Image 1 (cartoon, one colour):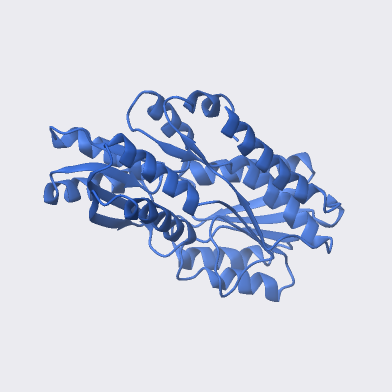
Image 2 (image 1 turned 60 degrees about the horizontal axis):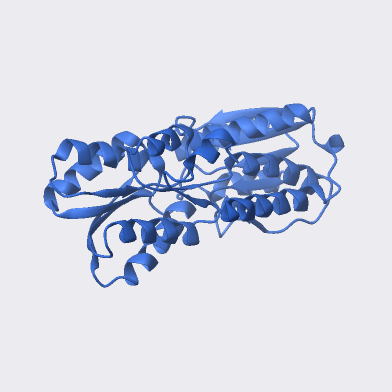
Length: 311
């Protein structure tokens, strides 16, 4: 409970920082929101938060869904820019084309708020995200502890090269490096961070590495798929599975023991913060280049609080 209070205090401080910009919705009547997909609970929560908070402030939110296609997203953003939006909240569909929509919007003089994924060569006015390295380190450390500090391990990555994938891989590998008895014997990259991919990739990796006892899926969908593959494998050893994000369905599955640990992100706080930041930039206020919110290690012991009140 103590760490839960720290998390909420940190999120409150970030939100307070945004609202302390003296932001007013007077200059922002319409916001464009570009998301990679609306099949992942993580992006759905951000979308709902942006739209609900925008409506409360009297702001129209136009949401476009790229269905995980970068070229589609670029075209959608070009269309958004013809609709007289006053600010642009952007979650890139992939690393390859991440810079183009930001460059287009900024050339049009429209504030850009990047959420979850950033492009270092073409950053927006601010970058809002969950902290990934430390949280992934904590998830993998917990998995390793559950496995007794040793064993063969698999990692199921998200989409290669995007900010969350890079950070979560770095954090997990830090945990592995601290345990000489743990060996990363296999890893694969997904395209959509999905449960189906998690199942297929894990199934293939388990066939090649039948003695695995630890699996880290870089998103809850990947972890849920991995857990399903473990159940189908008939493995005699206990295999511990961890995820990331704190998706609503995954939290319920974690409570039921489907998998073992995740890191719950403050997705709804991120959505509101993105709107506040868009208003602030449009009003000429100075805001931090990065606004990072900690995720919290979540196990069966503390999952109920996040089911009851998702941050």
